[in-house]
Image (cartoon, rainbow, N blue to C red):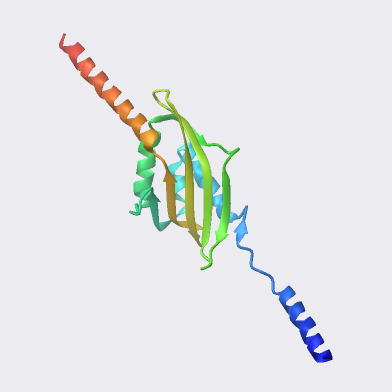
Length: 174
């Protein structure tokens, strides 16, 4: 009985010493990298934004089809020209790093993207990012947001620009 008691104490001691690996982090090098990338996006510093990605990174924007970092950078550069101001609300955003069951490193970001288009229309949309890191670089990024309102506003701006061009051409003919 005494041996069983000692064995039980030894088992409890070993179990207590066997710490669980931490899997969730409010701050890490990866969360700081993603925050730096968001800041580069907000300032239009595309070289800095690009520097956070691995050469082979894949980016998914509301899609199962991947695009390259260069294609996404070109897309962002063109899209942000339609905004007079834009950015994320730092007071309400949330970011965390997770080591998943395969020990892959993912950073999750939830934020509110707001801004004013060049025609003065203000827009806000919730955005979720799921970003995989390997060796300190982003290797995969999934971006989710409802683009309905933004796409409609862009179509309205395009229609207005086309209407203004037609009107200008008609006035030149007179």
